[in-house]
Image (cartoon, rainbow, N blue to C red; front, side):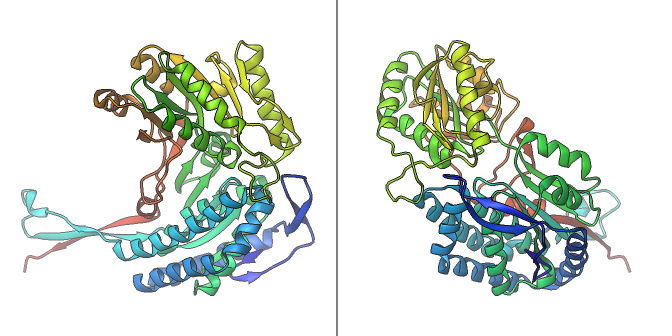
Amino acid sequence: MLVAGKWIDRPKKIEVQFPYDGSVVDTVPIAEEEDIETAISNALEGAKIMKKTPAWKRSEILFKTASLILQNKDRIAQTLINEVGKTMKEAVAEVERTAEIFKLASEEAKRIHGETLPFDSVKGSEKKRGYFVREPVGVVLAIVPFNVPLALCAHKVAPAIAAGNAIIVKPTSQTPLNALILGELLLEAGMPPQALSVLTGPGGTVGMRLVKDERIRLVSFTGSVEVGKQIAQNAGLKKLALELGSNTPMIVCDSANVDRAVDATISGGFSIAGQVCISVQRVFVHKKVYKDFVDRLVEKIKMMKVGDPRNEETQMGPVIDEQNAKRIVDWFEEARQKGARVAIGGTREYTLVQPTVLLEVPNFCKIMTDELFGPGVAVNSFESLDEAINLANSTRYGLQAGIFTSNIFEAMKAIEELQFGGVIVNDGPRYRADFMPYGGYKESGIGREGVRFAIEEMTEMKTVVIDTRE
């Protein structure tokens, strides 16, 4: 692991397993208290160095990192296949996306600025002049999930560097290898060693020890609501950026382009085996087009190739481990027992869960109330748009939602009434551009990602007031 720019090993290890068959890919050390303390104390010095590093230099480091990521594309993609179980296409796409995130951050590093303040608008302050500037928070802790580990790490690391912070990365124990490669490339790109650590080990011990430390000034976490709440309870007085998942709805009106809605359900519900925060999970289809939609959806799913992610023709690989595979299928079975009909799928072989469509699922089933994080969608019918919007909003989550319609009035009504951080019209709610603000309402989190908006989270405002009287 990387501790303040130095490679450190420890006798206690965590095995990283290939999700498809459980074979051991590699091992990583479990960080000890000494490593955590070294990382934090050096990060304080690294933060001072980063704050004094001019914007052009930070931009240069980020751009060079992007170039190095592309130079190592095959190596990193193979690592993602081995530790996440992504298909070859998904792995390559994530590497290329990560390089783009670093390029975007390289550009944004040059655009961090404040603005002047109109003090003469306040009676008695006519001789005051002033402005505010943005300064780095100091030390940023990035806690990264297993599903899109490289790109979501980049969404934390790249803005932190752009803003002039030191960074400590805590990858999940299931998929730490890509973060270690990224650490290696950041050092090669010129990142000050004191300002960079990648610590491996269990989240409950290593991760929470970092969260609790008052020298950490911001915690950026992507993961479950339950862990997010634990972080909030233990973090103390520091900034939090929490992206905590969803139970993503998509509405298909009777005026919709059904083929496009079907394609969005497949790409949104089954990419990365459904293990995405904004995976399409609940689809509400107008009763006039319901049968047509379901028939087309099932026919296309029948043609999907599910299997070994190392094979080029594979379109969907395994979920992360057997424990999650069992849970996912249990949720399908719960819905079936409570009255839902399984149109296709519903079974598994070890970690390969078949793409599943459940029809007319009761609203109290787990797949309708919680985050599945697996390859399954519930498809229910509706009669009025008001009914569909109410059903979409009937969740503790609020990350993104989608609607397919050719009626501008329906689109505007959904935009205004859906209680979500993002509303996507005529595309699936799985859509995300890395520059846009990304985050949710309700229990989907606190704060926003998207490079410019993450930079705002990772900086402090300093107000300057000057009295110009002689």
